[in-house]
Image (cartoon, rainbow, N blue to C red; front, side, top):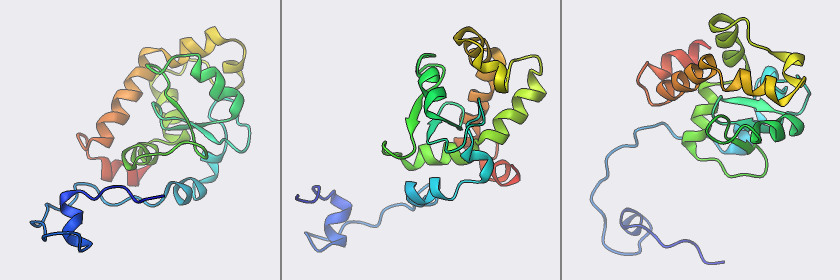
Length: 166
């Protein structure tokens, strides 16, 4: 298979044309491969955030959390506006998406939800029905967490400092 066409800045670097003007430095630090990223997850992020099943190979990009196959299917039923679900093994992830997962994590989500909305269902209670799942993930507290996570990842609230503190 032929390699993808080179962009103007790459042509000079690979000897395919005139040297390109120096480009500005990247705004984000390079992220390791997705295989290495997901392979080196902390133990808490290897469990499903909803049912604590092991080998959580799916993720809610919206919440930066990890899910088992069954719970990933339930999250897909919430709609992408509430929980955008991707496979950690079958889908391709952009560096921005990996950064969102790095800023999130099961622990950060659970801590925020316990503090902000302790009355919401969690753990086994989420498995009772799809309505319970909807009431938790479509709640104002979950929406606030999604917004906070977006702000962190965009650097609006000091993402580097807060991600390191988590």
